[in-house]
Image (cartoon, rainbow, N blue to C red; front, side):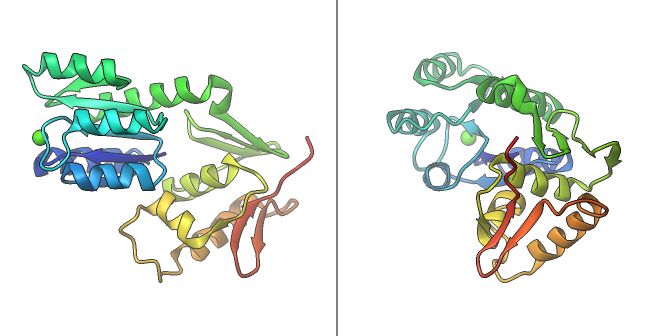
Amino acid sequence: MKILVVEDERKIADFASKGLREQGFTVDVARDGDEGYYLATNMGYDAIVLDIMLPGKDGLSIIRSLRAQNNNVPVILATARGELDERLEGLNLGADDYLTKPYFVDELAARIIALHRRSTGSTLNMKQVCDLVLNVTTREVSRGEDTIELTSREFNLLEFLMRSPGRVYTRTQILEHVWGYDFDPNTNIVDVCIQRLRKKVDKDADALIETVRGVGYRMKKTDA
Ligand code: CA
């Protein structure tokens, strides 16, 4: 899952992004409200962790603007102790949840997963293409009878491709969603990871991860 953390306090931004990455999330960090709002509107995120007091556009204005554009990305407010009025206003404006700083990253991760489950419907915790099954919550993958061991990056890449079987994603789109937007677009890291994934997923079976020459990659669309 891809998360945007909008936070101007470097210490909090660092521990949140580091902690979430360790748990397998892809994380972008914005250090002021203008950058946060720009990224929130231009990049697709599965959730946004939003500070209220920010240089530039403040957190409440960001939620107001997102919701006015019918952008329903789940938003978790990270509020300081004492910001009760702001927290209530944020929830009224369409924030989905809040945490009081300092918070535990484990709790933040659990809330993100819970929000994601609520917004996508619980059945979508399981993604299936042909006999390939991926569980978003337990992060388990199997093909037929076989359990497949993936690194966290390989899992995130597979999960991204499995969201829309048949849809072609360019290397840049994959890079942005699985590695984060500040990664060098000239790297061949996507191709390398796809090759590793194929060895594990398509080893002794029909190829499900397809190359679209000159464009990118897609998950095979099956009729089932
Ligand atoms: Ca702040």
